[in-house]
Length: 102
Image (tube, rainbow, N blue to C red; front, side, top):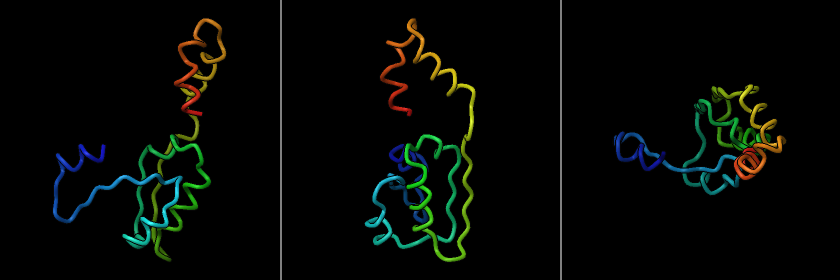
């Protein structure tokens, strides 16, 4: 997605970079500083360690900064995947993909 954005939305005032929000963000913060606004739309529900991600987002924000986070808290499709992963008929198809999502 970052490569696509760089190719299709090039702008001298916008820079696209990959960051694992649940990883170590210290180097990123040292290079770019902190932000007054952070937005995330429908991404955080894929993060396995949401607590670490939220702590990192906070550490990347300036005091008094604003954030808007939109994520899926509950979705019937996730329950369906879990049930399929437990069903003998579908288990072999779901094993790798569902384990990656957990």
